[in-house]
Amino acid sequence: AHTQHAAMAMASGQPWKPRHLLRLEENGLNVADIRKSLDTDGYVVLRNFFSETLLKKVRTSATRLVDKCFHKLSAAGLAADSLESLPFDRRIAELYRDRLDLAPTLFRHELHEPEFFDLFFHPLLLDLMVELVGAEEIRLFPNYSCRPKLPSSEGHNVLWHQDAGLSPDGSPNEAPIEERLRAFGRHPQGWRIINCWTSLVPATVDNGCMLFCPGSHTLGIQQHVAVKQHALTSIGAAGHGKYSTQIDPAVLKQHAGNAVPIETEPGDLVLFNNLLFHSNQPNKTSTVRWSCDWRYQDASCDTHRPEQGHIARSLVDVDAEVQSAQEWASISLK
Image (tube, rainbow, N blue to C red; front, side, top):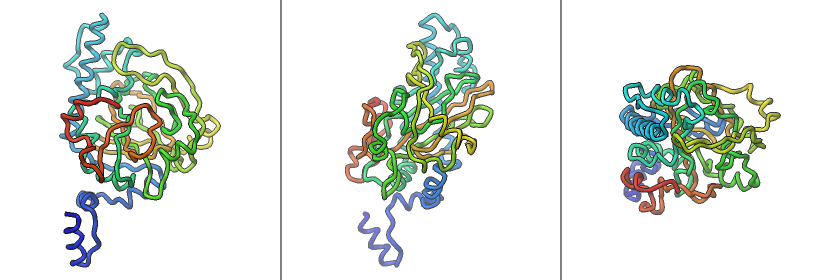
């Protein structure tokens, strides 16, 4: 098919383009502009990338996660009312109103549900990742989350950090910087890993939207310091890492003043560099700011984690890809 397409292009005098690139162009996505924003600012916001139909599926799955939270609280004698009648952006906050220390800050292992397949393996998004990562095989990196950011909860705030500066447990990553750059930095064809973020409800300054320091990805991997160690609990659902870690305060002092808020609507997709300085603001509202974050990496690179993730797109072995929502629901974080 590619050969036939190339022959037709040559006959018409037009340069040959792979089908995934044509699909991107047909959907109004200018890869050169996206790459320029990622290279210059370290991030780009693609408005209305996801359909409301897809988002409704993801919210449905997230609602089931809240159901499971209620069942765990109920089994522990801590909740009698499931609060099912409350809106999506209020229910989990009310379940944990008097027990914020037990509230989940993220869900990860629980995301192997059919609805999340449509988000993580979105065909057009994978087309874009093939171009931006520039690898023959890309993996869904084994760090994907759905996060309910609860109101007035310090435990749901994210300190200034670079993903490449953290270990899986949230502590500072002490691996040699050269090794981490080989896994998460630049290469001639693109960036070895791209972060994705989307909100399931409007993300605003008031409810704790993301904060970015534009251009900070060009500063290299910075020293990170552990600020707090958390006592993890088995009640509720998934928790956060064992540590809260941030970029060296001396470095932050020079750059945090340049931070910009990233306000989004449901359906918007934020792409950003793994080395970009980012954090979020406190949620000062009475509702929950639900969001999802995930990453795609060149599958030939080290994950710097025990898990290796899942092949999302392969140009060399299609059978290696996760094939369907049913397959995604039948496997686990690995």
